[in-house]
Length: 389
Picture 1 (cartoon, rainbow, N blue to C red):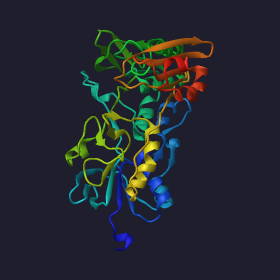
Picture 2: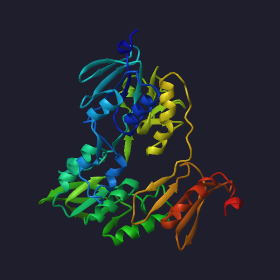
Picture 3: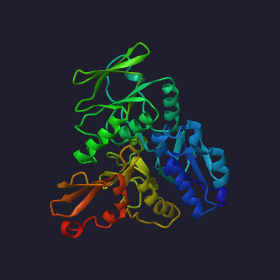
Picture 4: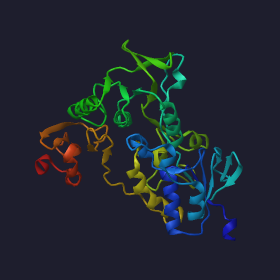
């Protein structure tokens, strides 16, 4: 069969995982046809940069690193922009899309995750915004023009990064969170409270142990009524309560899904010749957010798609939180692991080590200058306490 007549490898999604996979495939094979579908405009950009763009005074257009046309020409691929995929016929290997049917030889779901929508009451509940992609950020910047106060619902990692970014831009910020301290799922209390205090010094107000109940219009802005009865007047409301893997398309096609699209170590789903990567995927009951797991998976997936099945080897993947008011480097312990934080205050920052019930190191948080110790503690994950103390 002529190469042009072979069904292509099809990738749904043009985020970091989708474009990264196209690059990895082309590094290995210059000829196999590759087709990508995206519901948005397909511009390539750094998603982690969205939560620091105000500090850098970058408009949405300035975050674009490559256009779809440039990517098509450079990689010899086809990109269908603003073209949603409606359904997958896994038996016939056919997609139904906004531009018609598309056959595939192998299919990769790289659809990422969508913002969780809170069940808010009030006449302005539908005016709460989230920033999860470049189009969201463009809308956010438009809405932010002339505004002086922003309320963020969510005191996790993304909420704290945006709070720092907005404060750097001279915006007064309120953060509303369910837990007793910031980033409580990742940080021990003493570090979470230090982050709060540092951001408070920059003008961030904290409303914790509560959440937003309703959002109503008041004048040119909004009034949030919190579950504890407190009211917060603001110019703009940003929701940062988390993301939910996009699983609907895969589930409708008959794929096994849980919190994400279930995959094995080779990133295969339960459907034949259908794979998943990135924020939409789940392996061994775990979601793997952030870029590091994608970077680990891309070479193995590219090899597998080209006929060399390969299992992914995930390394330890520390996270550097983009809160320059309180620099944080962390390796989170497993969520279901029993243990305790061992805290050490030093002149260079706070060192928090998570020690499990067997007295082994299973995670760490390093603040400020201690971030330089990252590799030292990574090398000691799983070691007994007496060997790392």
